[in-house]
Length: 334
Image (cartoon, rainbow, N blue to C red; front, side, top):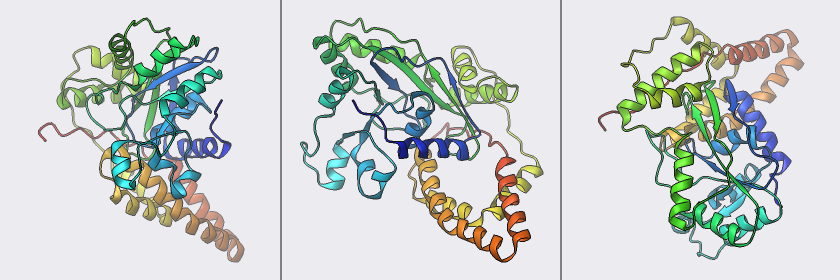
């Protein structure tokens, strides 16, 4: 039975604590029997670290691109070779063991497993088409006589690429699959996952729902719960987000306190090809910048303790008071 190693879980704790303002969990993940967790995929490689808040050391199927080179130090899981991975790295179809067989072995051994049925992430108004692997795994588990549950969950980001934004993980109820065919299982699982996920008719509706959820979150309500409620109802007309001058002052204070970290994050983010992986590149760039920033703080403490203390205090206060970013609407006329 596979569990995520301590280094990956520690990295997840650090990333969630430093990058996001808060990560709330609504609902309770199933822990009393092997469970197939079906997870929405909204924010690229960062999703795995976010879901760790609720799922702990539960492994997931993960693209082989995250298990190559130095990235192997940051990620772990059951590798999957996708078509684009074969093209990118010149891998054969049998370069790694069958992920479906590995998934079945994981649950037969008494463990649980996280799946991202969309296969890849995109920041859009609705989920990408769900792949059939979740139904295939469930059917084979049932044929093997494994007693297991299925539970859907979705991560709702107020701004996926925003430092100090908030995240809400909403769990649906765990259930025993009832479908008697692959098609029936696929429909059953898709319905369960859509019930907790962003699923708007178009970008305009998503933008209105996002605005309503963000306003509710400012009043103390959970963002994910407010999003799902607004999605079911007719959201109010859109409004204009506003920012005060204090927002820019706070951002400048953070940049002055952590100049190399901020610069590394901004430069690395340019490599992102969509909003769903900006955070991943920012975190990599910020980590690289920290390798320069931390020795500078240390040197300041050694040669001018008062200056070093003030500098570090400015960095900590700049991070703590960094303004919560407002959501950014999706383009309505792409």
